[in-house]
Image 1 (cartoon, one colour):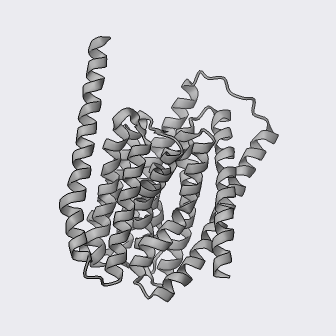
Image 2: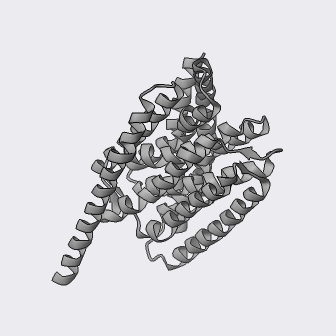
Image 3: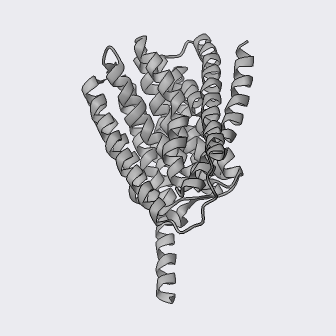
Length: 356
């Protein structure tokens, strides 16, 4: 039965993602709203629904470590795993708007979460602060969408009530399949994880986080294959922001008790989440796309991070030397590579400007 939950869950996720992307992109075209904004809002909210359901359920039964691990692990997986996989099917273009508004908001939300967690707990007041930030972000995003819609000079396909209902049906049906598929897959994953005897935080950071991120994986890959690449990148950025401000914020507000933050999360996982959000700036900036080469780098970083978690959970003696190697060798190499690529891109852009 556990294996069946995995298989059926994955099938529902892929089918639901296809329906969601198809309906959302057609709605965007019909109302003159860019696919990027649809990815940042409708699609991001839909694919964050599994994180919200799992986090609320875990918090209500007192498993706060799963809640925190789910959100933090999902945000790490969204950038490193999802963008890495999606870019393998073709380079992902990045709109300049993402760099000037949405990625900074995602980074600010990540830093805010780390700062609020420094006292070892996340309270209802912290949750209200996050929801307040969410309200400001959504108002700003929706206003931008309305201005863009009025300024758009592109011809729009005719919208009839039947077409509107059909596309809404695709979006709602896709979201339903995503939520059902994710829940089934996570239920199966929990059974496997429980038999391994690992901590709740590790379960949340790995199996539960990847399970609830599968809608983002499926949606981003399907969006890329269908040519809606703006949805793929916007979905990841929007989902990460919503995971923190909406999912974690609402969970903290509704939770009967404050969420305790494990010391290991403060030492490793929350700083990694902030670092991954910061990593988006140079990766997105160079040529305004995520190339296959950069995608492979992101995937490699995710494998390295997951391996560290596994070694730590297993109590291996290698965890210390491995962590030191990552800190002193791998991370400086990645930073140096990104700095060189950024400087090369700036020099190329300057030469093009001078030539014109």
